[in-house]
Image (tube, rainbow, N blue to C red; front, side, top):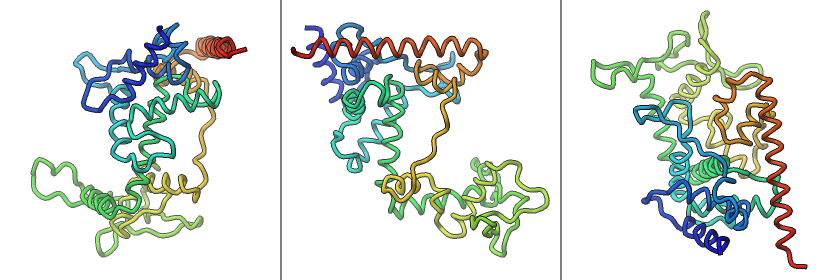
Length: 302
């Protein structure tokens, strides 16, 4: 009876719309049904879904650098449903239904494949919805025009003391400008676009990259794929670029993936304590996988 009720409630969650509130407990239970089966939800409820980060300061404002998983899920669902025409084959039109579909695919492919916990499924849906948006707007002239306008506005000369004058400050003093007031760009020895800088160059590579992007937009009205994240997503989805290289798992990232805790919080622990926590988390994952495997074997008819 509990399994039937859990499955029924999961189907209800899959049909929830964006304009209503989503109780966290129901989201967790639905994920457990999709990822681990209705039997696991009947035994443990939503505990097998792992924790969700709801990082908020005392004044009710979200802390910087911390992801609120509930708000991230709402944004991902809205983005997915706006661009559902670019969804992969077999994915439903609803955002929450797509979240549970990720769990079903992971369960069918094996316990080691796909996200184990709801927090990582939210991240997977977030990345999927961003790729869908990139595919949907890849050839949008309006999107490209907005990028060019934003780049020019960021470096426009301040005019007066209006309320938005602080947003514009001209180009940095360490770049060389041409006759039109745009930074000069040339190809380096690797045949990549590079800024022509003065003796005292940019304060950091990140700032140089940002200025280079804006200079290319102001000069050419477009960006090469290596500087345009959405365009690179599209080319990777079409197989025209190789997949992005992923960094090797560190103890902190692996522990964050297994427990759902923020990596920034885990990085504060000493290495000895991290090693003990990681060992326990791995043992817990193996125990959960073994229990799920035994339960599936018991449910199979002889």
